[in-house]
Image (cartoon, rainbow, N blue to C red; front, side, top):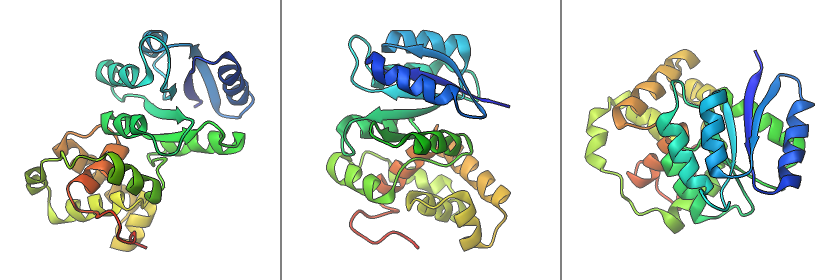
Length: 221
């Protein structure tokens, strides 16, 4: 089945380039394009995309508010939102990830990597390099996560959350813990449910803000 993509950007040239890129790629289908947040919310409800590429800085309803509204009103499963940004360290990116976006891409990302990123997101992984996550949390994180909520997790789920926070994929976690990838996916799903998280990126932020992963320390290898 094709991956259904909604492209949101207020710059016609960028939007047209992304639409053309996806239409030329195997297994991807553009279901709509929007020039602002209001259009994005409406089209997301009408077309039910798998992935939304969301620009942040737009007139009217910006990408942050649009992301919140799309995820709050979406039927299950909700779409994966990829934030498009000009900068790799941006308070708006941190807010978007905390609100449930699945990752972010710089606007100068090479075309083939954008296509790969969309497929990666659909497969359940995230678009967050550990070093970028660490910089975001160090700069913008407020340690607002209630650490007592970790008591709801089993020891195994806590360990999986720590590894997710370190940027490991399900396959890498499975290899480290000597589990099947399906079992890891189950642990991730359960811990996200217990913590009220809607995306894997939120789990990464929670791992940092709860202290399971400490900024400034080397990531798990």
